[in-house]
Length: 122
Image (cartoon, rainbow, N blue to C red; front, side, top):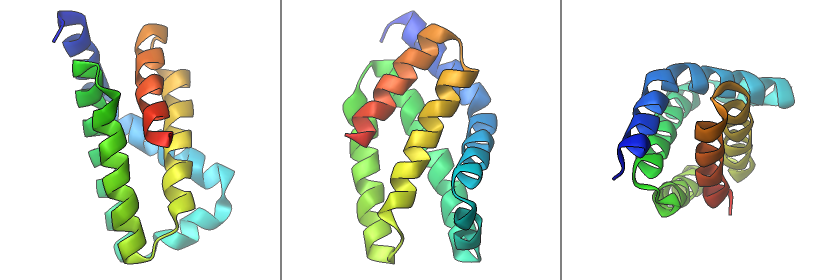
């Protein structure tokens, strides 16, 4: 791993909580019905999902390996399907996270992170 990639991952880690909250806020703004789906166990699941996704994103950035995030998204997709959760919400979360990353992070880091999210969306 290159030093600048590790620094980028550390930066992502340091702002992950804010990125997660902004992502959730954007999802709610884009789809007001999403909040209604966050009742009970779903709220806990989404909190873990956001943290997990951002942890994997930082790792993918650190080693320049988009496949890490793509495999994590695939695992989440299977978990969503097994729990009967809408797959569209998973896609919406990735799209919202990509938007937030591009709006809130410095350009080089935002671009690298967005490319990793694109791999997850594919």
